[in-house]
Image (cartoon, rainbow, N blue to C red; front, side):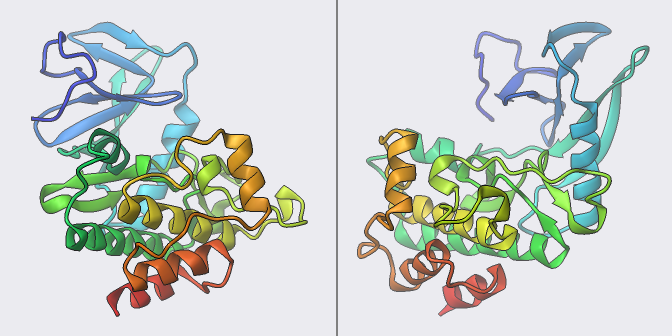
Length: 269
């Protein structure tokens, strides 16, 4: 049974299993969830955010449709109209029964999964990023909180609310919202001039580090201190990681990896 955010709530339709900056994630049935800024149950609005985000939901639906089906991408069943006049929509998404990678890590900091399982999680993550890049999509917010867990601890990438399709930047403006531990340092450049591919690969490296080290890079430090260390070229040690993972993470962090596809191949070695 998926964990509810508010255990006192009825565990049926509309029960909240997640919340972000602008949307709830709520149960539809035992296989799918709704992502929306409002929750309607039996014709009554149960919960809502003050600001609608119809444009973001439309963007995310378009990205999922563009990506198509892939073993490591969350399945999207399109947009449902959950209320009329005014129209309110919700993304209908595959339910991740084990929650997110970030949540699991934070709940089990002292009891990590076996190394072989974590390595497979890294491979799944790299495969997901390689797929979206092949399709001309930038996620713009890669982190372990957007990696969903399924049976056998297999990983699927989700949360494309800030993503862009390269061929449709006129329709969906570019965004970037990485967590500080996942953000490429400027290294003497203006933030707007940072190559988008290098931003995504840096974030991928931090995902792989968090999975294998079972903690975020520099976990516990303030964001400004993480930023200072990154700009100074100071990164967490990688010696405790499997050699292939440590090599890919180091390449990601130092802008020496050519593509996510390269990460997929190196993680197979």
